[in-house]
Length: 78
Picture 1 (cartoon, rainbow, N blue to C red):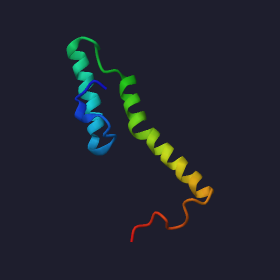
Picture 2 (picture 1 turned 45 degrees about the vertical axis):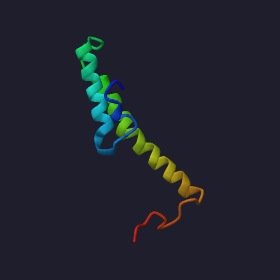
Picture 3 (picture 1 turned 120 degrees about the vertical axis):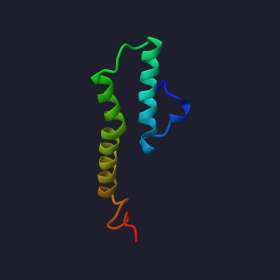
Picture 4 (picture 1 turned 90 degrees about the vertical axis):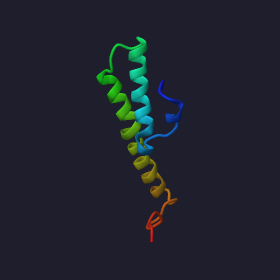
């Protein structure tokens, strides 16, 4: 990521990380290091920011339920 340092490490919290990556892309284009934002860039951003965390979370949750570390209503808020 070549965006502002304030955006690093924020994940999907208010889309700060994603906005930082986008601003980094724009900085690279302005500096001449990159010619344009490609479909591959967008696919990578969506995959890393949204799809993979969802898949990993569901997989880990199901595994933890299977081995008994998460039981019925453990995640319920009252």
